[in-house]
Length: 362
Image 1 (tube, helix red, strand yellow):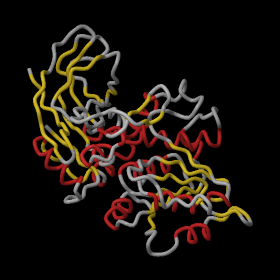
Image 2 (cartoon, helix red, strand yellow):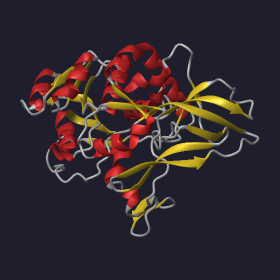
Image 3 (cartoon, helix red, strand yellow):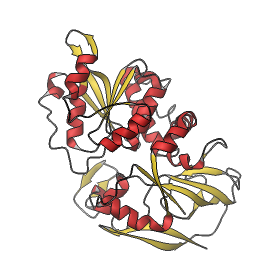
Image 4 (cartoon, helix red, strand yellow):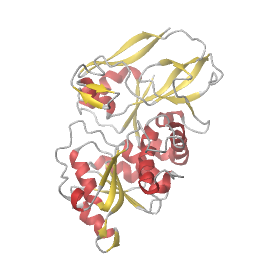
C-alpha cells in the first residue's frame, strides 16, 4: 500500500510523490484523507523559500536560531497541518474504525498514526467534516490568541476564552483566515465591539459577509477614527486589545497605533521579511504598550495544565457548530482536487491566484 504525498523539493518546486504507507502495528491506526486545508502563511513560506528553518539552524535547547545547517532542508516532505481523515484500520482501542477526526499530518492521501504520539480530534456527527480542517490546529491558533488576551488581564486565573474580550473594544488587523476566525471567537465570547482592518477590498467583503464591521486603513487614519469613537476617559482612548494577524510590518505598526495607553497587541502573525517599519520610538514608547506573541507552540505561562491543545480544539468545535454555515460559505473559497496541489501552491506563492482558504480533496 502506498500514499501520495505533496512535497516541496526546492523553492518554487512542488510535486506529488508516492511513499510506502507502512504496516499497521499495535497502537497505531490508519486514516484515509477526506479534506486537507492549505495554510497560506506557513506552507507558502516553504514554497517561496522564505521560512527561516530552510536557511539556519534552530537550537531547540537554547531556543535561538544560529548559523549552520538548515533545520528543515529541502525536500520538505510534511507540508500542512489541517487534515481530516476517516479511520480505515485500527490496532488500538483508542480510535475506532469509521471515526472521522482532525489531525496534522500534512497533505497526503492517507496516514499511519501512532495513537499515543499523535492527536486525533474526533469530530461530532453534526459537524460538516470539511470544517474539521480547523479543529486540530488552525482554530486552536486563534483560540490561543484569545487565551493570551485573557491571561493579560487574569494571569493564571483564566476561566473562559472570553475573559480578555468580553465587554471590551477589540480591533483585528488583517482579514485572512487567522484574523477572521479570531474575530469570530471575539464576537462569540462577548466583545462589546469588534472592527476588522484590512486594505484588501475582497477580504473586507468576506468579513462583512460574516457580519463584521470593517475599515480600510488606507482611506483615513483608523487610529484617529477608532480613538475618537472608543473613549474610556480623558487621555485614554483606543482599543482595549488588538489582535495583529497580518505578517507585514505596516500591520504591526498600525496595531500599536490603535491601542489605548498600556494596551496590548496580541500578535499571531509570521513576519517572513522582518519588521523594519515598526516605530518603537512612537506610540509603543509614549503609550506604554505591550506586545505578546501568541503562537500555538505554547499557551500563556501557568495555563498549560488547564488550557491544553485539547481544550482549545473543543473551543474551536464549539465555534464551528455555532457559526459553521457562515464559515463554510465565506471562508472556504475553493475546494480543489488533490492532484492539482502542486500547481495550486506555486500559483498562490507567485500570486497568480488569490484564495482565502483552499481545501484539497483527494
